[in-house]
Length: 119
Figure (tube, rainbow, N blue to C red):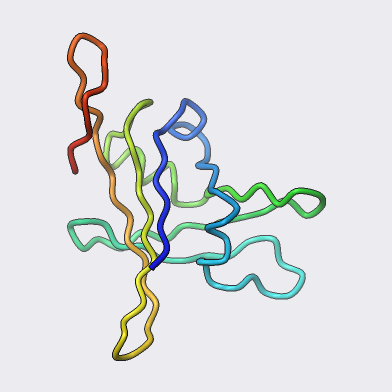
């Protein structure tokens, strides 16, 4: 099982989510010559979300989620400081791969974050 989580910044909530390069190995393979791959992740309510991860064509890959990402952010009413988590799961019996996405709202008291609550 591979996963990553990220506390959202301004760009993450308005345009795209930058993805750690180590998580690229967990995504479906890119087709030869392609710089983007689409995958589906299920949220905590069982709703499926299609995301597209793209990388630069030259130099450092710098993976980002663009397509589908902003719609997810708006649907969950995510803001700067909230957290998102992507999890890759492999079914041991069938070897089927699935992805989960979890959104968590920051719990703030007097402006300080004390933790996160699942949405």
